[in-house]
Image (tube, rainbow, N blue to C red):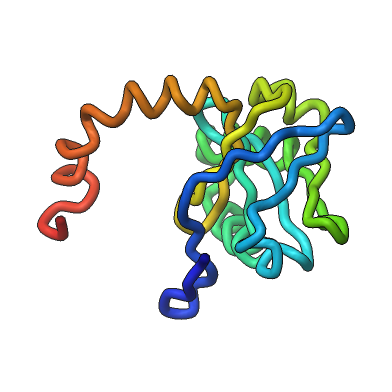
Length: 153
């Protein structure tokens, strides 16, 4: 389930384990299908996963990058990869999206996947890559709260 927070848009939560079919299609988690029914954008994410943004959130990021200084090399580099790999998709009536071959290759997606809620986006991971990442990150999770959310948790 997602919740609206201060009119920012949906907050995606949870871990789901769909399978990629032979045509490169993936079922979106049922609880997010309505929010994503009008369309979404898939692009490369960090750590070899894919980011899935509702159209409104992708537009917000587009505007932020549009106003960033084009003279900054990091902005140019990030924008090139981010937009060049982006694919706009509309789920079919069963709630499936087709993941383009180049994005499947980037994320190492073959069959077993994990879709995680990551605040304002979903992330799609190869199941084994997610397990490895999680095993590496969980020991440091408690320590990170002081750095990421000082004074809040």
